[in-house]
Every structure is written in structure tokens, then in C-alpha cells.
Image 1 (cartoon, one colour):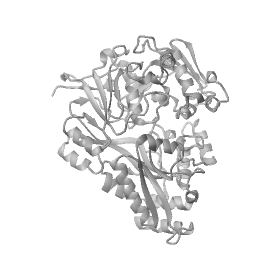
Image 2: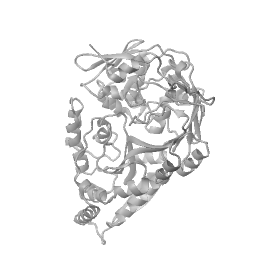
Image 3: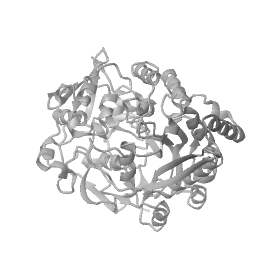
Image 4: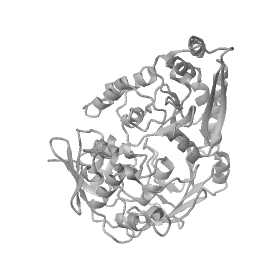
Length: 534
């Protein structure tokens, strides 16, 4: 067996005396150790195996802990697993768990991970992220997810209470990177079986993270408080974490400036330049591994016109990404002509032809393609653009509506609350829909696997050559060239309209330390933060 945890980052980690927040020499801690964090939409689920959104995962990460965590730069570091080994065939991983307890005092065991992973893959759970277990290439995952094998056949077992063994179906270079994702977090079987769906409510939820759920007023505020039974509680400084829901980003900015929020990580479109000038010690923008796009519904329920690749290409060409990034957003975002975020580790950006065209060339080509597809003044193309509640999403939808009007396409806007929007996407009840994908781990497959025929893939695009390339990439020592080819197919067939790659234009209090601005995943843990006296 080959020992892992040999990277420079991990070696440095092993030399550190503690895992939690580390105030710098000379810093004095503030009396109030609290983080008031803004979220746009109400939390949909706090169940690690049922969540599908970034917002949910940010809170779940405070309440639970997986085998691995991420450090301030995004490097993988030990979480519940103190160490792990991989056998020489690259198919079997053995994780050695630390001595840790659930918030009710019960020990966290390898069996808790087995139960959680089997639960995620079990069709009876109806987890929308069951595909993630397949993506990890755990042995028998696909058969379990499809219901062809029982969950007990999933390639994960508890050798003993502190030893977890995972068998993969094929060598998977990115496997360890998946282990900080919420879907892989352990959950307490005894509590779930006793409480049913109510197990995630305050007073009932039992977690193994640095915090416990203290209150949840849906759509208003969720509160987590320090967990004294967390294995590194002695080094956890922040006492309270508040997730405060404000559906309007402009109102959220007002509340931040009034001192009611400590961290607002999605400034309203167009506001960053002014705020950076006025509050240079609070406003910052950093790359964030998410991509914004408009999805086409290519399922049987979608518009017939969108089945024509010429129509999809015309719609993509007409969107002026430079105007969106430079005039509307103004927060450090970059125009997107392909799907995977440019800052993804190891990713080599493809050369996309339309990226080199002028605005005039794109519009001329768009009009030509629409005409060839049979659309013009006598047969106009009518579409509905769906988006979820947000002033920024509305601004972008209005801009796209105007871009498409310029080539003779009539677009109607349809606004839905977040839960309704996502439900409609998952049921293919849309024509064109605003969408964003945030990386589940720092490798290009997290983006491209979305569009696999059997991936999450709300638009139901399908391409056998694309699927084959991703299958080959999953075991390749250097899959960059395969990913580049896959991007070319995805954009050549225009499965979507990529719009921009995210940056986090945000504001946070100068006394709040430990926000990981160098982590392109924007994965954060309140246990790594602290406040200093001003």
C-alpha cells in the first residue's frame, strides 16, 4: 500500500499545532465572535444526501464534516480521516478515522460513512445527487443507483469502527477531491430512523461538524452555534454563525452598510467599482469556480425549434458577453465562451471560434443561421427565458432579451422563486433557463460531467462521443486534452449559452479574519475564522 498525505500543503498542515483558527501574533480577539452571512434564497434542505444547492452546502459544511476538508488555498487536508492509504492498483482506499463524536456524544464510526454513501446511492432516497456517487467511481455505484443491485453492494465497507475501505471501479485521479463534498458527509442513522424527515430540524439534528443547528426560521435566518463535542472545539473561536436570507441584493447591501451583515459575498451588478473606491479595506473580488449560462431544454418537452443546432448557435452568438461583464456586472467576471471555469486546476481552455469574432460578425452569423433554420419576420422564433428571483438575474435576462430581439427573436421573461425554478428545471418544464454551476471539486470533470447523458443535465442534451471522452478522461494521467475535446463538442453542438465565469465581488468586515479569498472553490469553514478587537 502507498501512503498518501505527502504533499507540501499536507506536510505543512501536519506541522501545525492545531487545526482551527490561528490568530496572528499581536492580535486581540473581539468579545463578539459571530458571523452574520448573507444568502439570497431560503435554505432548501440541510440533509447532506438530499441537498442540491451551494447555499445549503455552505451551512451543511458547518454542521457536518467529511473525510477531507479544504484549506485556505483549496488544497485537500484531513477532516474526519486522520490519514489514508491507497493500494498499488489505485482501486482501494483505506481511511483511518480520528476519535470524534456526534453532537449527541455518540462516536462517529466508519459505519456512519457507509450508511450515508449507501443512502445517497439508494433509489429509495431519491437523492438528486446520487449521480455524484457514480462520478466518484465507487464500485457498483451505477448498478445501485439504477436499482439493479442493493445498496449493500456499494463498494464501501467498515473494516472496523475507525477504518473505512472504499473500492473504486477504475483508478480515479480526482477521487480524493470529491471527499469534501456534502453528499459524502456521514449522517447519524439512529437519529434519521427515529425522526424521519424531521431529523434536520433544530433540537433534533445531530451533526459531527464544528457547529450545531440552533434555530431555523425558513426564509429568514438559520443559526448555528459552536459544538463543544467537535473534535477540535478547543481551536474553534467563532461562537455563532447566522445565515440571513435577503432576496434583494440591493437591500442586502444596504443592510451590510448599516452594520447588520458581516459578510456579503455577491455585490449587486455594477456596484463593485464604486464600493471598492469607497471601502477599499472591505470590498474585494476574487475568481470563483462557477459558470453562468442559459440552458436549452432539448428533451421531448422542449420547443421543437431548439432541436435545430443552427437556432442554438444563433442564440449563443447574439449574446454580447462583453456588455454583460463590463457594463452590467462590473465585478471581475470574465466572458465565457466555454463551460468550465478558466481557473479550474489543470484545465486548458479550448479555442472557441466565436470568441475571436467581432460583435458585428457574431450578429451577422446569428441572423444567417436563423434564416437558414426558417425563422424570420414571417415566422418569428418565440421563446420564454426562465430565471429565479434576483435583481441581477433579471438584469441579465433583460439584456439577453434585447440581444435576441436584435436578431428577430421574441423572448418573454418568466421569474420564479428558487425552489420552483429548480423544480421546473429538474422536471424539464422550461424552454430556456438561467443556470449556474459551481464546482463540486477543483477539476474540470465537475463541469463536464454535468452534461453526460446520465448526468445531472437538466436540458437533456446527449452526445455519445462526449460521453466516451469523459469516460476516458476519468482514468487518464493527464486528461486535459480530453477535456478540451469534450468542451469543443459541447460548444460545437451548443448545448447551452455560456455567459460568464464567476468572480466573487464581495464585502466583509476588516475585523473578520480567515475568509479564504485564495480558494477558487470558495469553500469556507466558520471554524477557521475569528474576529479581532478593533
